Length: 120
Ligand SMILES: [Mg+2]
Image (spheres, rainbow, N blue to C red):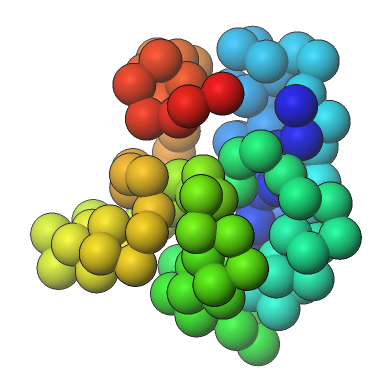
């Protein structure tokens, strides 16, 4: 399984990777630091799952989500953001994200994501 982790914060990426490795130790990981890199890596690697931050330089997560869904409407994108307003969640769900969670993602939330949100 290929997983793309997108966040401009290295600490935030490491947090996702830490909990992900506890659940999916065999996953092949790719990282991007902004939306543009994320879209390019999505095209190239066709990851099974994308963890996507919203607030990033160059291209934000909303724009990246839109482009990823344009490339593959079945893309499985989980938004992970400090912005926990219900408006933000509504917006990303309408745009095609599978779900949205506040930072940080722990092992329990990661387990829930793989059991409830994703089709793998
Ligand atoms: Mg950010």
